[in-house]
Length: 152
Image (tube, rainbow, N blue to C red; front, side, top):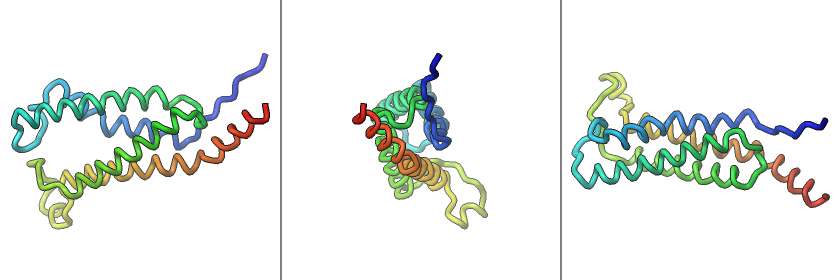
């Protein structure tokens, strides 16, 4: 009895880290957007939060479904690049955003400009970087599988 080849790189955990970062805002944004700690929540902002939460929830489901797939599948690779672009863009937006979360990590953190927006942006940046690293770490595997398919 032959076993199928299970190829999952340890860096695939980045798909789960994406979920961990985005699922809280997806759930809160869908069920109770007024409960989010954001300033100036008017009707337009609430609609956009719900739309963003729906996209974030969909991306989390896609990441969960792709996590266990082999690294060389084009769909998994396409999702990884899309999530990389998403997280890098979120990071840039949050770094350049005015203060909109009325919480603080204390005066020491504030003196180092460690605001909730900057920390959230940093986390998005790390996840975006993680997807880029995953891509580079698995590109040889994808190329080898493409060559193997051509040979058959």
